Amino acid sequence: MNLSRQESMDSFLAHCRAAGMRVTPQRLEVFRELAQTDEHPDAETVFRGVRRRMPTVSLDTVYRTLWRLEEQGLISRVQVLSERARFDGNAIPHPHFVCTRCGLVRDVEYAAFNEVEVPARMGGVGTVEALHVELRGICTNCRQASGARARRDSVS
Ligand SMILES: [Zn+2]
Ligand SMILES: [Zn+2]
Image (cartoon, rainbow, N blue to C red; front, side, top):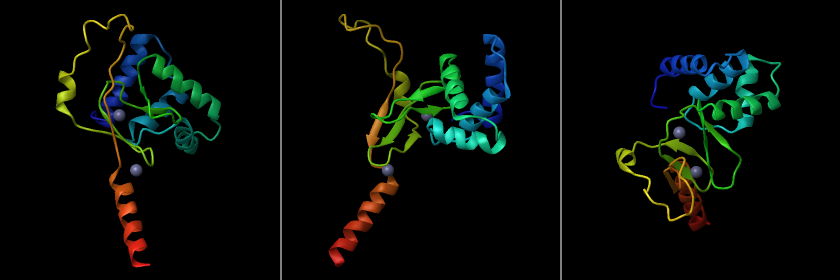
């Protein structure tokens, strides 16, 4: 998230009002949960976080709320390999780094992303609705873990 937490809560409320969408406690808590992390959690992780503040909330409600917020353009969904959907409190397209080993997703600062243009002509393939930049690799933790394993193996 590039926005501060307060800024993103304010723009969430403004956007709900503009879209004529009621700000229910569930919606607020689901959004808050996403806005406070850079981990791009899946629905179950969001559910566990929300449940700490709203013990009566159901996983189903969290799912439906996530889809609804995404539909409204208030949050975005990260396409990670073929895994479960992951969600992002930042609805403005931005580049992600994805670890192909553990599935970690993080935002990356990449100024050149803003220069990338969608081709004017798609040669009949289809119509472009969004552009996502995803960098894939091995995260520092996984890299260190495999380094440690290699050292152990060479000792034994
Ligand atoms: Zn990793
Ligand atoms: Zn992100």
